[in-house]
Image 1 (tube, rainbow, N blue to C red):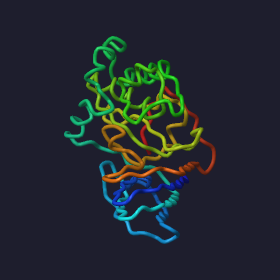
Image 2 (spheres, rainbow, N blue to C red):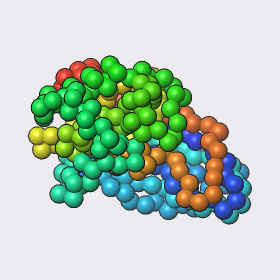
Image 3 (cartoon, one colour):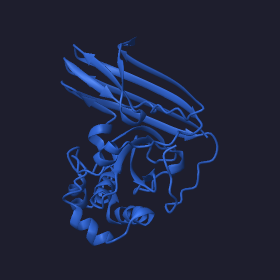
Image 4 (spheres, one colour):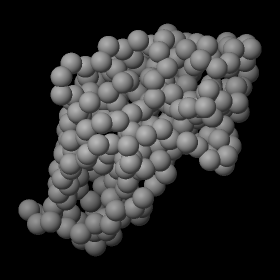
Length: 268
């Protein structure tokens, strides 16, 4: 499979702002080839940045701005082939079953056991996916950056990260390691960066996308972590910024895969 992705960001910083950005495709030795370009400019001039390695092949671009700046970022990548399987360490399986900032599995434990009883394995994954899909409405702009899984369940609406956080919390409540993945998602409408859950069952990480808005077979990992606090595409480490423009595209060369929610699918 050939997947082509791109992102353009324009943001404005105040003085003394440090920025961490995650928009590049994750490193993975399984891909046949990855061709990519990344341009970061201020007033038409390229600026230096450091690339920092994160978990699961994720890459963060780190920049510092001493003066107020309007920054333009252009990224393009063409990826051929499929990613190798991600084999977790014992510590990762512990980390991803713990409660976290946006996936409060401890608070949702009674809900999870009430709804899913003694279900386990693939049956539990499908049940959680279907339940979250049925309980929430996808409403653009409906959630706040501080909302976690509990707030999402109370409001019964959200965007992709909210759907993923709720699924992650419910799975962790049942002692299933689960994490959030930021992805490019060919076929997504409206097009944007997308967030899905991954759950570790039967010796492998499987994608859960309760929104059902894009076929999972063609999704491409950017990064992954406990929740969106680990995977934000743009964040500050001191100072502040305002995002003025965000354009994302993702496509496959040929027909999009058909989506079957009952299939077990991994990020490839």
